[in-house]
Length: 410
Ligand code: SF4
Ligand code: FES
Image 1: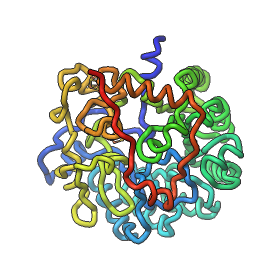
Image 2 (image 1 turned 90 degrees about the vertical axis):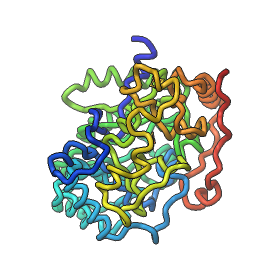
Image 3 (image 1 turned 135 degrees about the vertical axis):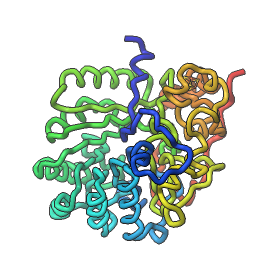
Image 4 (image 1 turned 90 degrees about the horizontal axis):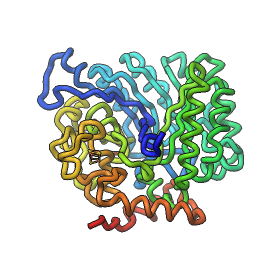
């Protein structure tokens, strides 16, 4: 197998429909038409409050304050609208979704609306009785993040004492209650050597699935890239291990993998294509085509406080900005892969090149690619920098300050 092939097989942490969405332009009242155009998945970021402070967090650097969060009724309305639109799955996330005291009501409303409900939790502050109640109200699936399989490493990465012990206890409750469990393993240079132990742990817990999710460098992870990025060699070794484990554990454990595309030759089809199968709602109700879309300054986002979810999906400026291929510049515009990867990730193009219409620099055809790989390899070869933890104090200090853009090749 060539290195290109090894590094190409991306999947997103949250699976989205990869089939073309038909009829995205023009509204319709026909319910069968709605099913044909609806996104598959909705990520509901119920709050940005979180007991952990992981330096690779996918939340935006500017965290939303609790006073701006949607009310219980506003979230319940979102769930009812999502069910009516034909959305299939809702991922209840954050921050830490269990920080919301009304999670029970939101879960029940989502389940009543016909949505498959997945709770994405850090699992350090949840009692067994609460989990049982959520299951009774219709919770279908639980995903637990594990910062490291080593207790000291887990405490340091999440900046939370005894986190691993609490998480493992919670994960066992999930399987004891007969609920499907996914272990989310965020991978970077501090725990990449533990990929085999992560997989053993998932088997031991009776998980259905594990996500070996190499950090994606947007938001907090972009700020912490020099503290997190593993070497190329470590990355390839971890991918080879996962490929062998997938064979060995067929029928026992599903292993999904998101690889760090700084070392890729071609980008991932981020979100399965912009505005194609996925919606993200922030704690304050802004509706985004992906969790990092607010990093693109030219975009305006509609809110569920002002508009219906369906109208936002169909007609909003942000969802239509990079739908399809019309917006593309060269080399994507005339590339045979443009309907396969949709030019990669708009947020990564923005973060690295300062223009979201540029080809994702993860693509070897991007003029920024060589320089990006060089920077990644050079950061990975040096001692790790200290973490900028994801917390409100750092959020206030860091603001919107990001690195200077790379200079493209001539
Ligand atoms: Fe994908 Fe654009 Fe690269 Fe072609 S040039 S492989 S469409 S990112
Ligand atoms: Fe926004 Fe990839 S994270 S398009």
